[in-house]
Image (cartoon, rainbow, N blue to C red; front, top):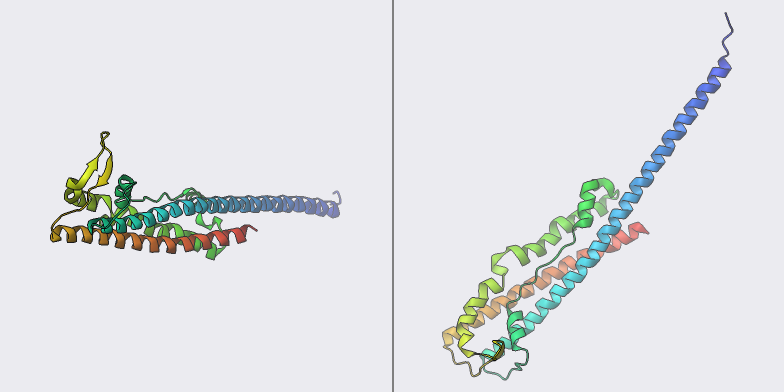
Length: 229
């Protein structure tokens, strides 16, 4: 019987074990690098989406603010005060204009597809979910879904029926003037004033919600940038 060379087998076993362990460790490191790259990529996509959303929201806020100025202009018009009517057609459009938000969801959709826990930091992950599933929905619901907040569908026909006899159009059919004095009944005047009041109230409410959500957007963007540094 041959003498078993234990030292040789122990050495070979240790060599195989070390090789397997090294391969496993390398694979684990590669997986970690891939996960970190995936997290970084998704966070950058979310940050870039927030930047686009901030620009869109800023445009909508500007629109609502401009429409509020037009609301006061029509109050003056109804009271037969002197009003600059050089842009009356645009003003009449802006009075009833609705502003639809466009939310960039691609980064959040990528996160959900790869698994929410791709973002390792619990507080950051919660902040992302809250922005997209709660705060963004506040804006989209009040702008798109709540009927009583719609400007054009609720008030254009009603006001137009009262004011149409005072409208002056050029040869191309373009509105160029709302003739003064506007001599309508006190009841009709109060009716229009009530519509203007509601338009103004709705827009001020929307502007407050935009400002609230913008604060959350900017804070999340800051936290993402801190995580990426």
